[in-house]
Image 1 (cartoon, one colour):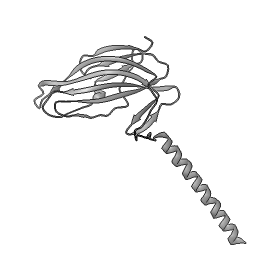
Image 2 (cartoon, rainbow, N blue to C red; image 1 turned 30 degrees about the vertical axis):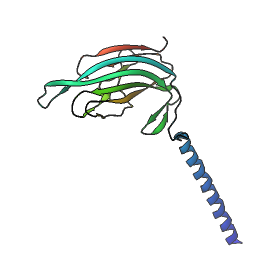
Image 3 (cartoon, helix red, strand yellow; image 1 turned 180 degrees about the horizontal axis):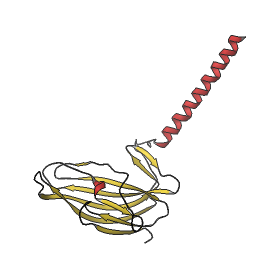
Length: 183
């Protein structure tokens, strides 16, 4: 009788562990399941605005002299509730969204260059706060005489529609670009 009870307890514990394992596995795979083509899918952007802005980044040689630089082409800016970060789907928390700047880094030099794109963009959400990108692929390796698509992202409050994007080197002059998603 005692052996039978022990066996029943072990059986119940085993069933519970298997059920918990299945639930955990399904919840993990539901957040990052590729579609039938093997690609991750995310929700469409809730807002999108063309930027078509370009600016040059001056590079310095070993002697500190400026040489031909890299060009950053900011293509568009989006507000999203989901993004892919390091191959995993990331959802924004309630009351927040992701503001994503899609860009291309153009290298006209005959050697590869690494660029920290987060150092050239700041996002203004009010008059005196400038946010650095929290989401980025830095350092971005741009091969010789090539173009590399990349992006940076900022977590922002949902419902905000007006932003100021500041472009330029940290210690240099900056260009401000006003972005209004209501227009």
